[in-house]
Length: 99
Image 1 (tube, rainbow, N blue to C red):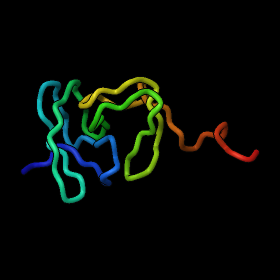
Image 2 (image 1 turned 90 degrees about the horizontal axis):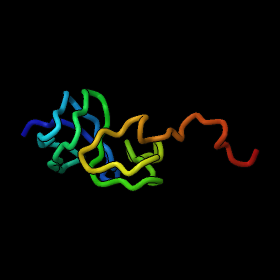
Image 3 (image 1 turned 180 degrees about the vertical axis):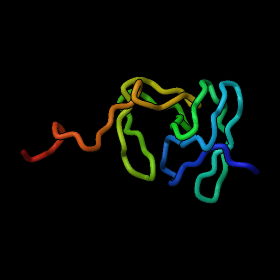
Image 4 (image 1 turned 60 degrees about the horizontal axis):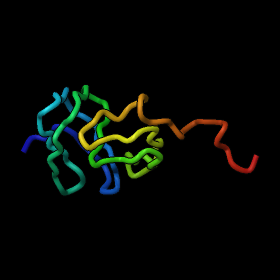
């Protein structure tokens, strides 16, 4: 089966599109040894992320098995996950602990 997107770790809640994906199509996502089908509710461009599951506002965004950000809004399964609904938690001086 052709993969339309990839997620690296089983705990990831977003996948990366390997091609432009149209709203209404089903994306086939490879993740470790498994494959899953995700109905796309929005168009997602090549290289961009989308939600593998419904993600609630405030939930950590996991990619590569690591926290890369936090949802600033609810993100439905199959929706584009990007700067409009995720805040980055990497490289932010305001989040340094112990200062």
